[in-house]
Image (cartoon, rainbow, N blue to C red; front, side):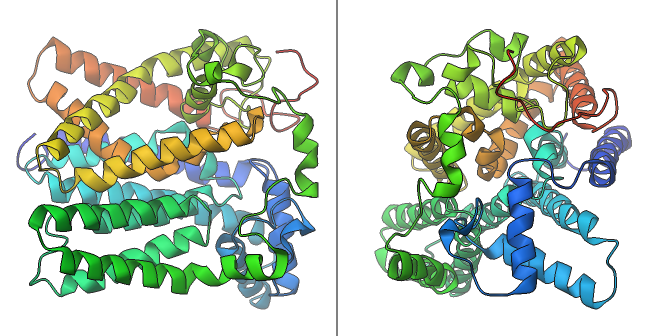
Amino acid sequence: MRGAVASGPLAAFGAAALVAVGIRIRNVFTYPADWGFDATFNWQYIYHLTQSWALPPPAAGWSTGDPPFYFYLCAAVLRALRGAGKLAFPLFTIPLLSVAAGLAIAALAYRLVRRADPEHPGRALLAALLLLYLPAHFHVSVMVNEEIVAALFTSLALLGVARPGLADRDDRRGDLRAAGVGLAAGLGVLTKLSGVLAVAAAAGAYALDGWRRRAPGPSARRIGALLLVVFAVAGWYWLRNELEYGYLQPHGLPAHQMMFALPPGERGVGDYLRVPLATWTDPQLLHPDLLHSVWGSTYATLWFDGHRFFLPSDDPGVRRLGTLTLLLALLPSAAFAIGALRGLRRVLRGEGAVDAPLLMICALSLAGYAVYTWQNPWYVVLKGSSLLGLALPYAYYASGTLTRWTERRGPLAFSVWLALAALAVSVALGCTYNGLFAPLEVSGLQVNETP
């Protein structure tokens, strides 16, 4: 697909994008506002801030230990609507913010790929669609949750550093760009602690570029600008925690103690090596085999509703749809892995200015996720949405591999497009709330149920 995209594929891409956006908009008006990951507690935090701008103590509630940017943003929106007399709209407005953030991430993926590979415009469209049809992206796009906003800031920071010439001596605009990267990363840190990974990836990319060019001065200057802006934007919150409460990041708060009784309650090394067949045959996280599989559970929540916040847990049709979806999802997952390995080879050859920050965020995010799930050994923390900071690397590498597989007409290209189309249909069916399947009576898996 060199040059312009042909009218036929362009129309197909456009139709698929409209369907994905339409499902998200429909979900906003049909999905219960207090369902989803921590949604009830997040609403409580937001409502508190509509009454007073003062930050509550971290231990005041379930969500009050989280960084406050998302909650202040939502509270500001609600206050503005209240002042305008639009009391009927708040329940829809906050999820619409998440939808907008998710669409912005897809647009950033398009921009990254278009800039890096201008000879294949169809690849950029495919990159955006890969994100629009990622179930975890669908899910948090309608939930009152900070995950998608944090992923947006991480993606903005990555877009700023995934480019050649970061430490060019003559590019003074690079200093301003580094400050802009710091602003995005700082807002990410102020939204979710995982935002520090974007800071580390960006600083690492500047350092590597400066070392390769033997120009440490400009590189150090831009790292300094990055860190200074990050500290100015987000440092006050962490200093406040340390000075007032004696810790930077709260852990084991009384409000979270109800979680301590959830299964499995402990993690072993085998939990990180085992991917059971139930990942595909019965993808719900209370399945006994999935309880002791970190990556199997994560895959089931990244590509399907493993927590059952959208779909009923006892419907045989749901299990069959999950099996189909998770088998088809092996295709873009494998494409991502292959593309990332090719990117690693470019970096090792001294190339890959775009690859370095993308691979750094992948390594840091996966390592951080492994540490977090080890320290918090309960099934509820295993969420593919926690890895949405990898949205740009996934879109970039998967789209590159899939484009190579489909460049020439033939059985391979036909099979790949057919599988991707089937995956899109199955994801659309599984992510449309109250669509193919009856609405839930209770959101999420119930621990007292036997899967």
